[in-house]
Length: 464
Ligand code: ATP
Image (cartoon, rainbow, N blue to C red; front, top):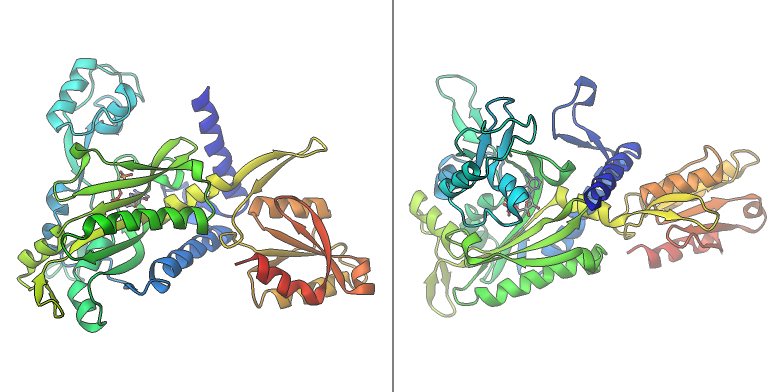
């Protein structure tokens, strides 16, 4: 029953995203391309707001962080050095009858209990599968699974125009390595002194075995990552600082409800061999708790590997203390599309009104909302439309605003509630007499009357 409720709330979120122009299924008029999504006019506004707010709080407001934008395709040796060629894989099985492909670890966790697969080798997972004889979840066949094997998640493509000269490259599976290979460039050209961070926002690609749960897990997605370089011995302190900072950003800046967030420390057997500590900030998605933000203490692994494979000296020279070392790294890695799903799940509400009617409302924080203000004339005629347009044109110089003159006023309010617009301004016959308008606030639905000349100050105060 609880599962049905969860599934239905994800369905409702997907429906409102499509209905109101946040997210459309990818390549829809050609029958789609599974698990790809296109963001519509309101969706892109939310994504841009999230990116802007991340950049503002992780780069502009930090004197110890700078940003870069590295290439999507890197020299293939980068991925050998980072370990992605040999290790970036998930364990899979195929059903021999219906050809359904499954991730063994996730399949076993669903069947045997959460975290069953943590720390288990491929052989141990294989053994559990044989012992339990689970049927295929798609066709029900018994004992029809192939042996479990590792599947590398990186997308390969051919680089170069002629067959003779082209070679294989990978689309980056994370933005982090583009930062590591530019560490020396940044610290020598931008006068950065340790401790300092390099941030990047950009697309990543992973050929996920089971892309699913709407935009939670897709093969093409966007990441917001930062590598924070610090002196060995100080990493524990910095790890805590960044975990707290990330949590603060989610709750205080984006307005995500605290009870929908939790911190999960990775157990020892879950950690990558080079990682000293990892904590995930998890969000309570409609289908259950899931990783939103991974924060890892990555030691000096990445820079040491790049030093080894490139033959370049990537050590930092601390001139004040006369020291030379490879810095340790704290990495907060966030997925933009997962954050979008968290934001919209958090904001989504179906509310029963006093008159018994239902309304769907997206209670975005004003700074996250795609449209900040909607302006309506009560009627198009008698000069109300012209007056409302004049107000709209003034407000749009400062905020992303929308003008709507179609249909009953109640319906226009409902539409803006579903888009998550925090304020609606209505122009009526009194406006023409006394230059006042009605402002209706989305969450309380309370209305107040103010002078047109006060609108700018009013919104400056409310939309930060
Ligand atoms: P998961 O365990 O869910 O596969 P991960 O631990 O491999 O994620 P990281 O490599 O730490 O993820 O990537 C950092 C962040 O990038 C994740 O916390 C998540 O928000 C996002 N992310 C990773 N893979 C995907 C994906 N396939 N689709 C959407 N977002 C993703």
